[in-house]
Image (cartoon, rainbow, N blue to C red):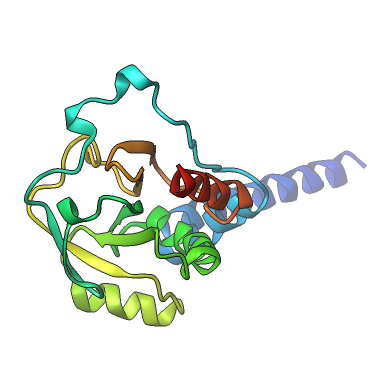
Length: 199
């Protein structure tokens, strides 16, 4: 009887080790990591913080930077010409699993608002890896505007971590900024953008 219990205990330990090894391997394998992160978003984790800054936090550095422009799906786009539009900007790279994981949720948001002329989406691939980015877009059936930066991105927008999402109001001020992966598919995000557009 004791021998049988020892055997079961040994088998249980080996099964636990095997599960631990598999989970660890999945965490480091990019494709499965994206899949796991998307699963966590679907159960309600990773909601974006969409807090408007207090009035006294808005300063000159929050405004559209002079000289910054983007090129890509929308042609040449100068940020200083985007007054009167709410701008959803997402900074990402093709090698970044959390960036890739949140993309389908941004596509859902884009589909809800793409016909609005007062809301603009800019998906900014920061490495200039045009072929990889376009290939990724095709593989994932994504059709939001893909752009690349020309000029220095202000540190108030992107301080180094990606993905980072910045939402600008019609005055070019930062209305919200979220660093890290988030699920943007919820109605509260679309409502936040529409509220900004109606101001």
